[in-house]
Amino acid sequence: MMMENIKEKKNMLKPVYSYHIASKKECMNERSSYYNFFFFQIKPPKSGRLGFSCTEDLLKSFWDILNFQLIGGRIIYTCKEADKDEHVRRMVKQQKIPTPKSSNIKKYEGNRGIFVPAEIQNNVMSIINGNNDWVKLTTFCNLYKQKFGSLPSFGNLGFESMETLLKKMTGRINTKYGNDRILYISAINEENYS
Image 1 (cartoon, rainbow, N blue to C red):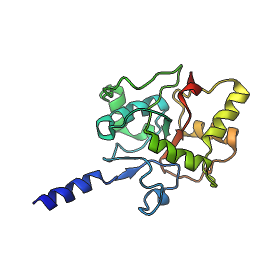
Image 2 (cartoon, rainbow, N blue to C red):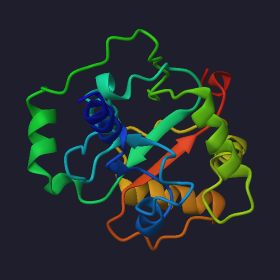
Image 3 (cartoon, rainbow, N blue to C red):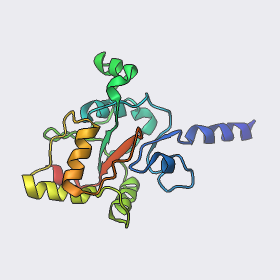
């Protein structure tokens, strides 16, 4: 009986859906280093064209499951076709998406963010600084600040707008994502947003 409980608990902890800057094939490959990079422990509503503000609310709805201590890098999650997802639209419209019970979510001028643990930040930095073709967000933010003086207020930008913005600033994003969900993580210190 005890063994069954342990097995059941392990199954509960196994990620069933992942959000990555990697391809869908890599995300779903258990041997991939991206597989356990960042995940929800339940499958969230189907993807759609969510802007940053709505996305933050959506992430909040999984707060109790994520149960992360909020420190470090800012998460920007965006994906295609969100406006076609009736469930998400209804949740947002009826304001039924719960908010986290933490006061650690900090608000910036037009830039609100969810913060993730240091160990995840380190993984993010190794990806950003590694010898690979993934988007280098530190480069993007530095270039953007040099050109415009401060980081943008992303507001309700959809996936296409964000992708265009990243391409313009870095020239490093591969657009062949199809319907994959994409997670952009900015592993930048808080003072960069002050």
